[in-house]
Amino acid sequence: MNSAPVAPTAFARPQATIFDLDGTLVDTLGDFVVVLNRVLNDLGQPEVARGFVELTVGQGSEHLIRSTLAHVGAAPDLYEQAWAAYQAHYSELNGQFSAVFPGVIEGLERVRALGLPMACVTNKPAAFAKDLLASKGLLDYFDRVFGGDSFERKKPDPMPLLKTCEALGTRPDQTWMIGDSSNDAKAAHAAGCPVVLMSYGYNHGEPIRAVPALQHLDRLDQLRLD
Image (cartoon, rainbow, N blue to C red; front, side):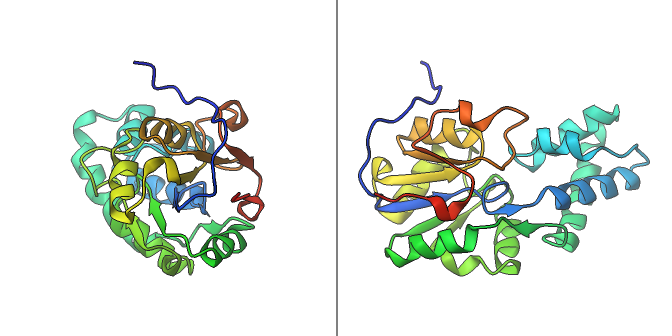
């Protein structure tokens, strides 16, 4: 079965919205770079460059850590030690080297003004996601926040979006997914959710406008809701 995203035709105004976090609402690349390099320093391994991290984030912390260890030539059996160090450093530094993207607050305000249920669904662990949203003044916009450890599978699997629709009480075809990567688009397509993609996020080095979507936006406050 082909799960590649396809261009939507026409959709009515959404009845709910689901937002990705990293690369969509908050530029967290700086956090990832600092945390990963502190982990590598702890393990006596060479540091990684920002460009590598930008191409690697988006598929969950486990994938990020394993990919980083492989990139620097570290033994795979260092994973458990790296994971523990990552948890500790991320808890300490979460949000310190990140910033809300321009237009995000204005865009969230527009959605909230319509009275739509709003959720945040990320592959970041849920506790880290909630702490980050709170530190940036974004947490109160969301009725639900789910992370990569909230369900059995992560995006691009559709499960997180389908479970979130259940929690919000809306049908997938009435629930817009706003993200920044092909992972978000694949999850949305498989779940039956219309997808909107931000141009500035982390799409593994690939042009996001090549990924079919209902809208491609440079700022969240450009979102058209009808």
